[in-house]
Image 1: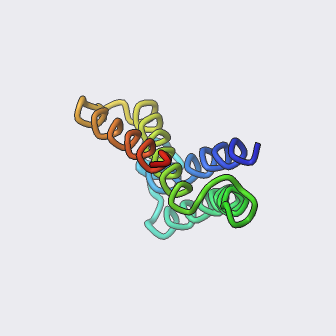
Image 2: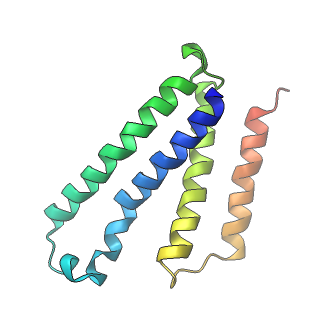
Length: 123
């Protein structure tokens, strides 16, 4: 159950972080965002990152093996990277329709999934 909670929280966390890092690129498409200064965009992104940390810290704290969780530090980082790319691909596909994901992106993502397998495999 701790593993599922960790992965769920990492998905939520990465969703907030993706919006904090890239969501502002869509602000100019809205009337309220057309004249925002860079400092305003930074503060909005920091606000989103705050919510990212509300999920990321408990995910790693509860998921870490030395705290009673199921994952090693390397496994936590690997899960996080795979989730980051998954969230980013969904985000890009839904919000940036002019960005196309090509075969090379999918192959690269597949290699990251393979990396997850290699890291979790008990050799």
